[in-house]
Amino acid sequence: MRLSKTVFATMLIGTMLKSQAAWAQLTAGLKVSGFVRDSAMNPLQGDVTVVQGTTRRVVRNIRTTSNGYYEAVLAPGPAMLIAKAPGFSSETHNVAGNQNRQYDFSLRKPITVDGQVIAPGGVPVIDARVRVRYPDSPTLFQFAQEVGDVTTDSQGRFELAFVRAFSRFVLEVEATGYQLRHSPDFISKDQPMTVSVQLERGATIRGQIVDDNGSSVANAFVTLRTLGNGSRGSLFPAAVLNSTTSASGEFSFTGLATGSYAIVVRKEGFKPQQKPLDLRSSADDHWQQLTLTR
Image 1 (spheres, rainbow, N blue to C red):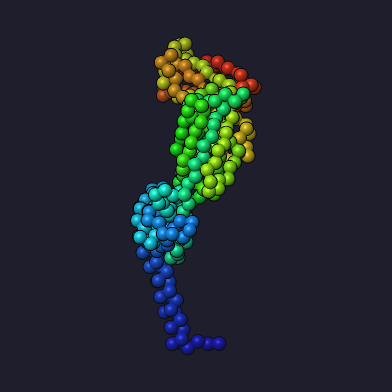
Image 2: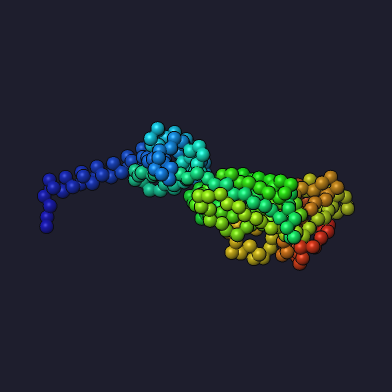
């Protein structure tokens, strides 16, 4: 079927106009809007933070209206919207594509998680640091949403007051002389929780860094890395520990789990050195002397 010149021209102009409109939207930006409410659909006055850019981030805060409405025009490319309101946990939406779209948020009040950190035999661990980790899958941006560290008291007790409701999380606990511990996964509800975490004593790696004349090397950078597959299957990577040698060239790492490690030493003006070693028991106390050469 042949099209007349008039019909063909009309179709061509229509296609060009659509293309121009799409290009104008891409260059002018896309509009995102929506409402920020609580779980009962009541409007919340707060902020929606817009994060754009991969290498160089641009961050803007948009204040919601009295009925919880917000509106923003975004530049082309991926973005992230983070809604916040006083007394509520934040919520995130990732923005992709080039179409105007509505993103609504339903914020929940955080819960309190308290408990006790103990050693074998039920002995309280004082001054242990406790934090929350949310092992969510990676998003377009790594925007940390973690509860700040708290420290256990003289009875080993702690309280975290701003844990997200209806979320999956673990408690990460560290204390001098004990192994870093991740608790089992917890699923929070909308009620306070009480949990306990038991720590295990750990092994020690310590030593001294000297030069090829036997003189101590101060301020050398010492890194302890785990080797092998000890962390395979874990939601969290094995810790990489760093230290700096003292005026006498000494360093130490305590609270280590059994396994294979490598000590890596760097100091400006010297060649880097590395030494592997194995910890077979939590009672191990390894002394290592490493020599740096120019």
